[in-house]
Structures are given as C-alpha cells and as structure tokens.
Length: 179
Image (cartoon, rainbow, N blue to C red; front, side, top):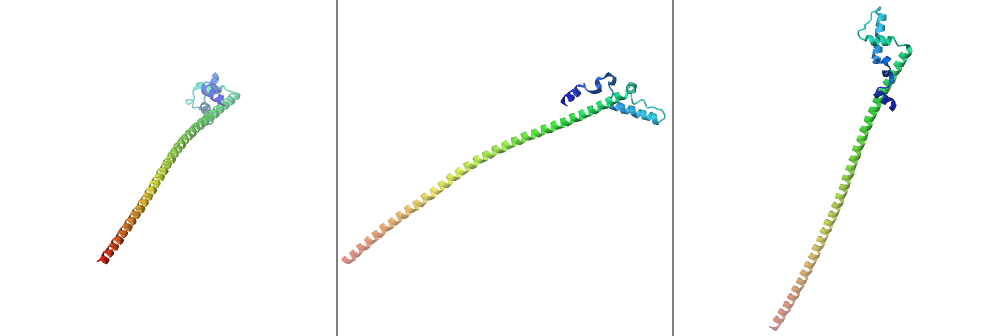
C-alpha cells in the first residue's frame, strides 16, 4: 500500500500516464453522462458548453473496457486517497498521543522530584524537631537539677540556722542559769 501511495504521489498510477486519458477526470465523465441524458430527454438538444469538445470526443472514443478501466482506476485512486488521509490522521493522532505520553512522563518525573525533595525536607524537619525536643528535655532536666540543688542548699542553710538557733538557745539557757 505504501508503494501505491508513493506512486500516487509521483503521479505514476492510473489513467494519468495514458495519453488517451490525459486530463480526463471523473467529473468530466459525469458531465458527459449528464449531457447525454439531457440530449436523450430534451429531444436532441445538448448543452455542450460545460464539457470541452476534446474531452467529449475522448469519452466518445472509449469502449466499455476502457470505461471499466477508468472507473476502476478512479475507484482505486479514491481508495488510495482515503487510505492516505486515514494514515495521515492516524499518524497525527499517534504523534499527539506520543506528545501526551512525553508530557505525562515529564510530569511524572517532576512529581517524583518534588516528592523526593519533600521527603528530604520532611527528614530534615524531623531531625530538627528531634534535636529541639532533646534540647528542651535537657533544659528541663537541668532546671530540675538546679531546683533540687537549691532546695538542698536551702535545707542545708535551714539546718545550719536551726543548729545555730539551738546553740543560741542553749547559750541563752546557760546564761540564764548562771544568772
């Protein structure tokens, strides 16, 4: 079929290469038949202005085999043109489909890149959050230890003051007894 299409594009197929049919088109044959029917039904009056004399004579000289060949050739040419148009549409559709596939692939790659970046950022966020939570825990522990130390210092000071008060109370009692 591709060979026939190339031949068709090169102009080497059909009746175009036969000098007897040179320039004859299917529409010319239709016009000839229409004129012949007009002559038949209008009492012999022909409208010859629509079809040139050379083409009329060309068709007059054709036998049935030549007419059959002409119709077959025109039919094949029409089928070839329809096939060519269909292949052109198919190729355009395939090109469009391929372009859509490429665009989809690029979009998928971009999405994968964004997801990878997001995953990396989420990992960094978790690391920072863990570090901050660990630092907060350490600060809380330090504050708790400091409070305990201060509490123990205060209790030690209170104990020292109590002992001092007891010693002073004992001295005072001793002084009161001596008096």
